[in-house]
Image (cartoon, rainbow, N blue to C red; front, side, top):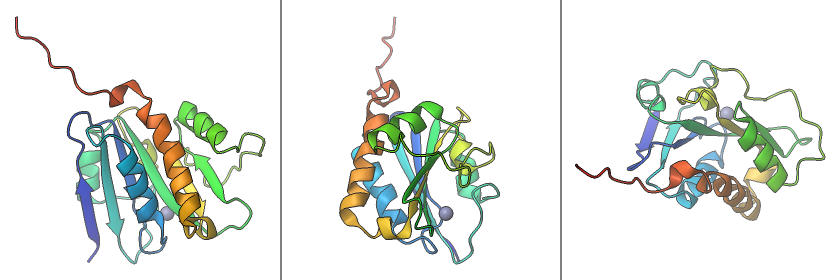
Amino acid sequence: MPIVSYKSATVHKYVLICAIHTIPEPGTLELADAIFSMIPNGCAGIYTYADDKHQSSTYFTEPLFNRIVGSYTTVISVHGHQSNRDPVLIGGRDRSAVIAIRKLLGLTGQRIPTYLSGRNPANICNRGTSGQGLQLEIADFALSNKHLVSWIAENVANIYRAAHACMPAVSTPIS
Ligand SMILES: [Zn+2]
């Protein structure tokens, strides 16, 4: 039986941080959790899924996920991959987040790989209401490096912390 866990945002359902391959991709749970802990939890939720099967991001259909993802503006999806060539691949349809994070991580001079681009609209990272999310594909060797993981998490969280949607909700006065 797969293990599903979800912690909801409490004020604004702004960003849902997901790790859906926590068993075949060790270290992804820790990275997702680190990002979650660095964004005010009023606007970030975290969803994790552990299963031996490797359901792809495009065809991922889990009832709880299907139910909650449309209540968030955007999604950050965390994965592990096995290439030694590209330690960190930043993808997804949220172009401004992709550019900003590539810049913070010092990846701007590098070619943008076409594989694992996360650009398919059906990819879980693009299933928030904006239709634009972020996909982080981190190489196994990088995921096992604690310092690297917290550095990546901090830079990613910085971009989302800065977003206006992360401001606390203002209650509307009753007239
Ligand atoms: Zn994955």
